[in-house]
Image (cartoon, rainbow, N blue to C red):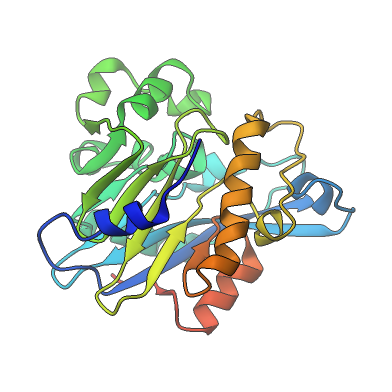
Length: 271
């Protein structure tokens, strides 16, 4: 598996239309896990792992990257006591999903798709949700949670697509195939009108320290392809020095989410 960032950047301006203006994010829940599960060699320090969704803002519309999850789905992950959930944030996310021009799934895991699959208006949301053929197949054949199972007929309601290594799905947004965390995993590159560039690493890393230290996860319940993850972590680590102006985003890192928001690189969800 090799990655060519220069090619990815060139693809970001291939689709006609205005580039996006901003990236926003929302945290709807958090899972608390010992650090030793989040990063190999970690200790028992409790680590907060936010469950997030991102929003790409265009002059005339918004595009959601993943859809978060409802409280019942979040609670299904709890190992004992219920973990933090933020209903007001989910209400805001629900409005953002309803108002979005499009929704893009990065992979089939529950905390990325449940906001659509469990929604009362699932059909309406599915009709504007892009999912790869591989993700659609996994949603049908091996749902991440039993209650998220969909039928082949349900999948026809989604916008199903496929591609090789990279795909410029919308102006300024390039999908990148990165199997490893799950067989269908993707990263997302975003270029804004002001020239700012982002690489959303999704779940290749759970924490920026996975990238900094080039150490993978150690959670026994996560069944990843370690060789593929190692390649991806090496690439992301290298970008920290070769492209320091590139903002690498991580789905489940509270400190990093707070940092990019404090620096004005990521804003609050727009509804």
